[in-house]
Figure (tube, helix red, strand yellow):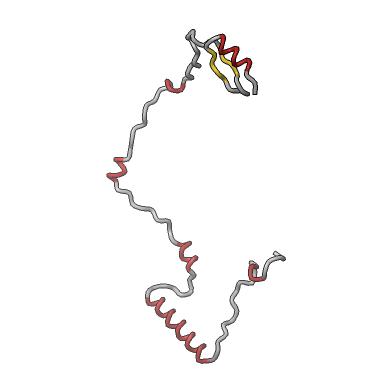
Length: 126
């Protein structure tokens, strides 16, 4: 990380010693911190335990399942056959109106109904 600013460094994140403008400010800050710790201890919060440590110790929430709902959620499986899995036969033309299939431009397939249509398609150019 030699190209980055020192503030982006992953090391050296500890806070230094607090500096106050004067002794009065330092005294007020210490009093506020003591009263805050007293309030935490009054409500049963240990001031020395960090928040992320508390959350790691907590158990995973497991909701209670109503026994009636547990019974009603059992469904029978659908019975299926192998019939829909068979391959469909390829469609074939069985009529007598179309003589054949011609190619007009590139790979454009065109049905041919008469000899005249076949001659016209063969004379066409790009």
